[in-house]
Length: 440
Image 1 (cartoon, rainbow, N blue to C red):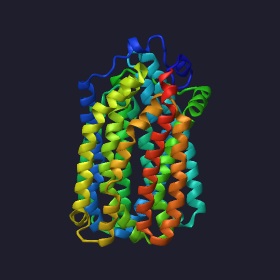
Image 2 (image 1 turned 90 degrees about the vertical axis):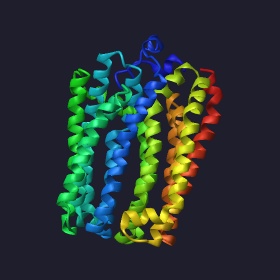
Image 3 (image 1 turned 180 degrees about the horizontal axis):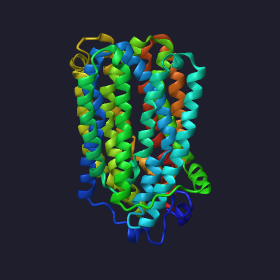
Image 4 (image 1 turned 120 degrees about the vertical axis):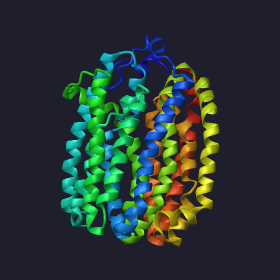
C-alpha cells in the first residue's frame, strides 16, 4: 500500500505511515480469540434477545402486530445506516492503527460523534416528513416515532472505538446486562395486543440506555477528551466516508427493503410470518457478522504487511469457521418444522417453506468476508460500492417482480439470488485487483 493511500487528514484518517508498522503491533492469535469470544457473546445476545422474546410476543401481541413492528423496524434501519455512515468500518480501521496515540483517538472519537449527531437531526426531520406524507406510516406514526429511539442509542454507542481497541469485553457486559433486565421487564409487562406501545418503549429504551452507558464508559475508561468538531472536520468526514456509507446503504437496501416491498403486496399477517422466519436466519447470519468484526482489525494489519499474509490469515481463520456455519445452516434446514413450531407454537407451512429457502443465506454471506475485507483494507471502496449498489438494484427489481407473483416466497427467492450475486461480484472484483494490490 502506498503512502499516498494513508496520508493524515483532518477527517478520520489520522494515520502516520512512517510509524504505523512500528506502533501497531499485530493482534496475536490470543487477542483474536478473546475478541471473537466477547463479540460472540455481544452479537449472540443481540440476536438471541428477539429469538427469546419472539415466541412470547407472537402469542401475546399476535402476528398482525408483529408485522406492523417489523415494517417500522425495517424503515428505522435506514436511519441507523444513515447515522452510522460507515464509521463502524472506517473509524474501526483508523482507531486500530492509532491504538497508542490517545490524542488521535480522542480526535477520531469526537469527530465521529459530532458527525453522527448532525446526521441524527437530519434523520429525525426526514422521519417526520415521511410520516406526514405516507398514509401507511401515518396510521401507525407512534410506532415509527418510538422505534426511532433505537437510532439515538446507536448514535451514542461507540462500538467502533471498543472494536478498534479490541476491548470488546467491556461493551459485552454492558449490552448483556441491560438486555437481560429488559427481557424480564417484557415478560412482566407485556400481556395483550394493546401493550404494543409499552413493548416499543422498552425496546427503544434498551438501545438508548446501552448507548449512554457505552458513551460514558468510553470517555472515562480511555480518558478521551471529547469536543464538538468543527464544520470543516464534519464535512471532511462526510466526504471521506461516502463510499462506505453508500456500500452499507446498499446492503441495507437488499436486507431491509425485502419486508418493506413485501408489505406493498401482502397483508401484515404475511409480513408477520416472514418476520418470524427472518429471526433465526438473522441469528445465524449474525455469526458471520461476529467473525467479520472480530478479524477486521487484524485483517487491516496483515494487509499493511502483504497480500500473501492477508490470504494466509483468511485461510487459517475462515475454513474451520465455514465448516461450523455450514453445519448450523444444515441443521436449520433439516429441523425447519421444529424451529417454526418452537417460535410460533404452530406448524405454519408457509413459514417452514420460507425457512428452508433461506436456510443457507448466512453461509453465502460468510463466504464473501475475505473478498469484502480485502477490498476495504486496500481501500478499493468505489469498486466495493459498485458491487453492493448493483446488488441493491437487483434485489429491489427481483423483489418487485417476484413479490407481485409469489408474495413471501418471491421475497425469499430474491434474497437468495441477491446474496449470490454480491458474493460472486466481490470475488470477481478482488481478482481483477490482485496485481494492483501486489504492486503497492
